[in-house]
Amino acid sequence: ILNVEQSPQSLHVQEGDSTNFTCSFPSSNFYALHWYRWETAKSPEALFVMTLNGDEKKKGRISATLNTKEGYSYLYIKGSQPEDSATYLCAFIYGNAGKSTFGDGTTLTVKP
Amino acid sequence: NAGVTQTPKFQVLKTGQSMTLQCAQDMNHNSMYWYRQDPGMGLRLIYYSASEGTTDKGEVPNGYNVSRLNKREFSLRLESAAPSQTSVYFCASSEVGTSGYNEQFFGPGTRLTVL
Image 1 (spheres, one colour):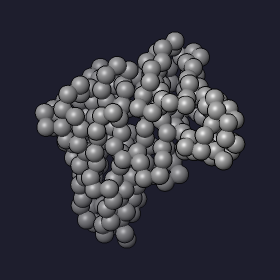
Image 2: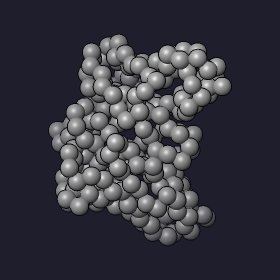
Image 3: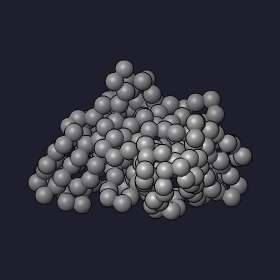
Image 4: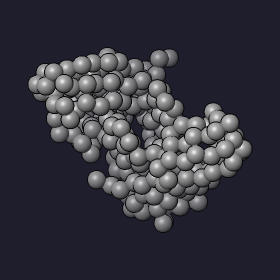
């Protein structure tokens, strides 16, 4: 079983704060790294698919970076809003058919 | 397009009973997956299927079997349910993109309780 770790486990910030989380993964057998946003009572939805070392992706106030050589990815949220409250999952994609290992997630709560 | 659908949404079983969770996708994806999600944990891969007719074990396959009936459908069977299999089960599908595996699309989940 591959070790994919996310930190912190949870985060409470005020509206307007910027924040970031970390996903650590093995540096071998890398195919892709995915970030998902998971709101309560819904299904996970993809934010980013990252495949190349040095990748940087951005969607609105959310961005992500990837370092495959050292095995980590950062997710940044600029100016957090209450609607950003969710659990953010990373998934390490390795091997055939998109076989994946998910981290346990970082749960973000943004207070108005 | 419905995306990924799962049935049933909720199920209560007694220990030792069997049941099949159904999953279907209408996006013409080759790869399909079954995950379980337990409190405080992320998604753990039970089984996956790279294409019609092929299946392979994930991280936690014990106590489960799967069938890739056709390209659209991927079912998960519990032959003799145990309380440790109480969980929320998610089905997902994806396709290989030009630069690797594209994102996975998830169904709404099945909440299973085994008494």
